[in-house]
Image (cartoon, rainbow, N blue to C red):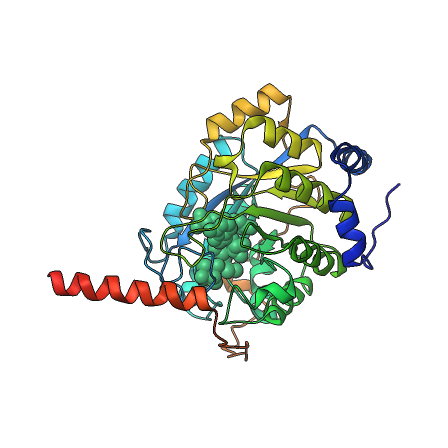
Length: 371
Ligand code: SAM
Ligand code: DTB
Ligand code: SF4
């Protein structure tokens, strides 16, 4: 039986990543079968409840206000809209709704109260609820838990070293702090990252070192392949090869045997054969829905057709962990604290982020002049 190790070194992980492919697949699939039903895949539906206008400078993200991308920004959705989308997701075979907001961090107030109501509403539909809202305090994590949140997604994104080349408005340690805050509650942790941002293979291994050191390891680890969006600093990144994706999934499976490895952004560019290899190598969850947050994703019906072809079954909700109870707002034990935590703002200069920001300013100036 596989043991859970929290002391992987970067070199050990690199050696696994670089193994001959057939050996790597065999090793990963063996561990996968020891720890999971290989024919069950958990399906989460993404829902962008607040899109665009984000103050952060994440170099990969089309929702950062400082870059010029084509996305349509939106204010926070209503609880009614969210409920309708959740019911649609449920009827299409999804067991979890993951609500994303383009926020740096959560602020106490009416918007957060609405998010808590969204969590209560979806949990009452007997679906797992996940949120990804940026940085949160311990009190906010407790309030989400009390509303019935099942998972919180907060990605480390890359290695601690390469993080500085991607984001200048917050630090890697802020990500760890939020995960720590979530861990103090009953909410499960979903944390992974992106490949294809110009990082070295060592950074991929470094990210897995950091994730595997978390104790317990995250219940879910999304592996995203960069969606290079025009206007972002990473618009010209070469697409990740399917082989790299398969190696990354297999390595994640070996390093974190009991976690759910999630095949995430980038699936529109992956063949079914490629995705099948990822499932064989240990991926056992996906993000479904015609859209990720702002970019395209395979059609739900196409995904269900692929599942049928491969003999895969969508996982039922609350198989891995019991459904949390929902405490109604009026019975809450926790009051908002209105804290203003000191998240870091390194504000170092990342050349490609600055260039993209400058380009966006020029486009804006030209648009004003044209009016
Ligand atoms: N604002 C919150 C945050 O940053 O934690 C939540 C939303 S954010 C969009 C969630 C995650 O989506 C990011 O951490 C990143 O891993 C992933 N992501 C964003 N843009 C992406 C892209 N272009 N390609 C692949 N993954 C992306
Ligand atoms: C994650 O790791 N990937 C999802 C989810 N967590 C929130 C988001 C992918 C976003 C891809 C770019 C977009 O659609 O905006
Ligand atoms: Fe904002 Fe999250 Fe996008 Fe970064 S990844 S710019 S924090 S929405």
